[in-house]
Amino acid sequence: MDTESSTTPAPLLEVKDLRTYFYTRSGTGRAVDGVSFTLKQGESLGLLGESGCGKSMTSLSILRLVPRPAGRIVSGQVLFRGRDLLRISEQDMRRVRGKEIAMILQDPLSTLNPVFTIGNQVAEPLRVHGVVSRSRLWERVSKLLSLVRIPAPESRLKDYPHQFSGGMRQRVVGATAIAAGPRLLIADEPTTSLDVTIQAQYLRLLKELQRESNLSIIYITHDLATLARICDRVAVMYAGKIVEQLTVEALFERPAHPYTEALLQSVPRMDRKVHRFASIEGSPPVVYDLPPGCAFAPRCPKAMDICRSESPPATRIGADHHVSCWLHEKDEHESHAAGSQERQ
Ligand SMILES: Nc1ncnc2c1ncn2[C@@H]1O[C@H](COP(=O)(O)OP(=O)(O)O)[C@@H](O)[C@H]1O
Ligand SMILES: [Mg+2]
Image 1 (cartoon, rainbow, N blue to C red):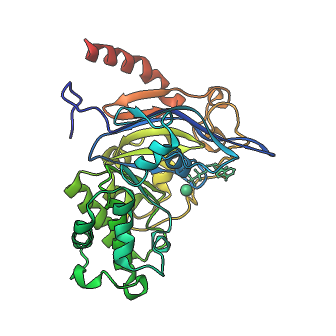
Image 2: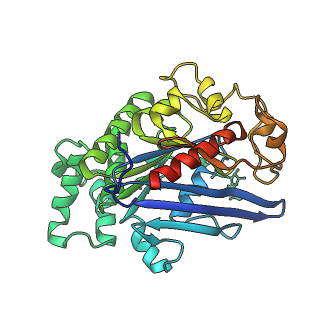
């Protein structure tokens, strides 16, 4: 495991206190409410949480694709290779999308257009971003297809999506996403619509791509088994906030937030996929009507008085382990002391 040291390279992505709100007739919805995390090159971070907790809006904010006009990024920084993406022009942002940061959406199979050939669809990002010369375009497309394990790719360039199996189409989408050589791939629950075999193949593919091109991944899911296979670290989200950040090992061995514990308890077997966390009492919060204090308090079996009135700060409780929960607040002073010792 990595140890924090002065030789640690600067993070690829640093999200700082990001806030994205929706302004609607029913009020202001704090979809993303002060989210901060960092991601190193080659690292994969899982965003975990129930539906509606702000996972998609966090990733769409990074790409500045929040639905308008209701949605707005109201504050924060998205430092990508040191540059704040929230402060660059729309034209520069278009160059970042697809070229430096690629995104695979919720239903990857529908991403392919049935009326264009496979070859043309993989070539598209290469053309748009002018990644290779025209003379080398098809060579590059074939190479990308072979990278995602499409057999005899040269002979398949003129095929249409319907001539490919579901698993192969999935891999073509993977090829399209990495075509322009992005450093960061954001995958928003890309496996939910797939059958289990294809899903497993797809996760293997992502892992391979990550190894081969040192890709960083933000993987959005509510499926713990998938997360365990793909991610190094996890950010657990609840009501627009990251309530706990930790390594995948720590997630399964020593979750600290009662919400994280509840997520783990709601999965009887790690190899089974769950869509809902049925065993957590109460309903997920509506970000338009948040209670004061910790948003999880109304559902939390361990809630204390303070939880219902004040929002808990993020506390460092171990190397690479942060939690926002009053139960751990007494550790905060100790970890602050530890932190100042480290700096000396
Ligand atoms: N188009 C929209 N208009 C208004 N509110 C929205 C819209 N999209 C999302 N939201 C609000 O933002 C919250 C977070 O949404 P989202 O990031 O999509 O959740 P997740 O991806 O975790 O399921 C939702 O709970 C919802 O209240
Ligand atoms: Mg979503």
